[in-house]
Image (cartoon, rainbow, N blue to C red; front, side, top):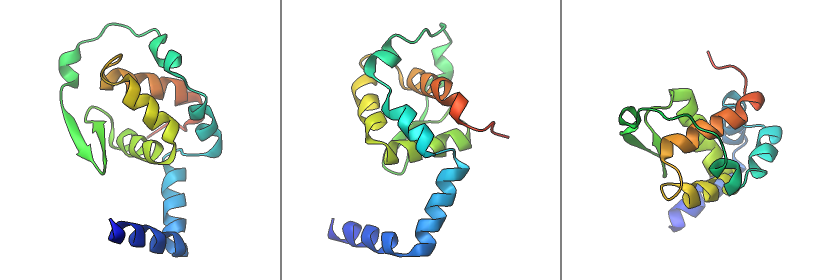
Length: 125
């Protein structure tokens, strides 16, 4: 655990690493505006969101990505965005913990999230 704290503190002091992290966050749409939007989400935002029925069999695989589990059915860009938003905004991470799988399936959570965040994200090529 000590090495992790030391590594994190070193990387936060390294201006190149901080610049790279900021660039990656910008590339994946993590802006102050998006963070504020995400912090406004509540459990009811997700539970009351109208979802159409869909074939769940296509959403059966998950992939381990850093310290969070992210759906494999997301695009690479969405997967990286999800990891970044979960690690940068504790509120969405907590919502996901409360909602999945008790109230929503993992794929439903991300469908709702990206639908709600769409207006704050640039179109992905």
